[in-house]
Each structure stands twice: as C-alpha cells, then as structure tokens.
Image 1 (cartoon, one colour):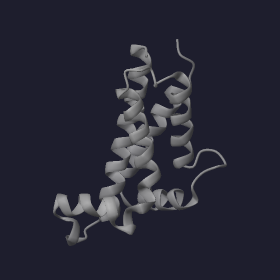
Image 2 (cartoon, helix red, strand yellow; image 1 turned 120 degrees about the vertical axis):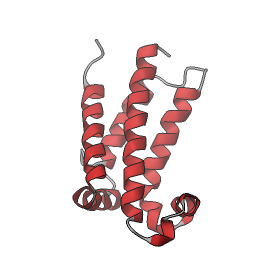
Image 3 (cartoon, helix red, strand yellow; image 1 turned 180 degrees about the vertical axis):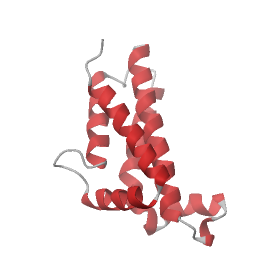
Image 4 (cartoon, one colour; image 1 turned 30 degrees about the vertical axis):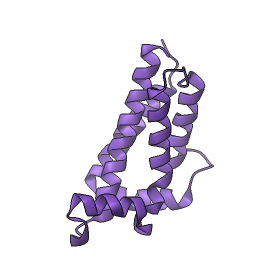
Length: 133
C-alpha cells in the first residue's frame, strides 16, 4: 500500500465518518432520550430508528479494515469500489439505496451539519475520481 493510496483512503474515511456523525445527530434531533451519549450509542447499534445508516456504517468499517491491514488489502480497486459505494449512498448514479437517499435528503434540508458534511464528502469524492498524478 502506497502512502498516497493510504492518504486518499484516509480522506474518504474521514469524510464518511463526519457525515455519519452528522446524520446520527440529525436523526436523534432534540429527543431527550438520546441526550446521554451511551444511550445514543446503543440506539445507533440496535434501535430500528437508526437502521437506515447501516450501509454507511458498513462502508466506513470496510475502509478502516482495509487501511489497517498490513497484507496489502487496500488497493486502487478497493478504494474505487468504496468511492462508488459512497456515491451510491448519496444518490449519485442509478443504483442507490432509496431509503438512505430519502432520509439523507430530509436530513440535508433540516440539519446544516449534514449539508456541510455532504458537501465535503462530495468534494472528496470528486478529488478521488480524478486520476492520480
């Protein structure tokens, strides 16, 4: 794994984690049941209210595991697949998850942090879609 490839994967993982965090807080809203961070954590893990975030969570884990593997699991092809998956999640392309897309769009309209982090993710995706110099 080259340093440049790792840096590009780090950029994508960071942008996805930031979006994930913003979406969690947007979904929790002002619900007093989620004021305790541990309660929120357990809700994200097991409450059906947050289940639509599962695809995003799995993508973050996939990238993090590939980045941590010393056996060279992180390749250009793995990163390209992760970029394509991230694009599908936010509705770019035809093969997107309609439930995630709808909930994401609602969050973008209602939570400025989601709109900002989505914009940052789109910028990272555009950069990663460019050929490596």
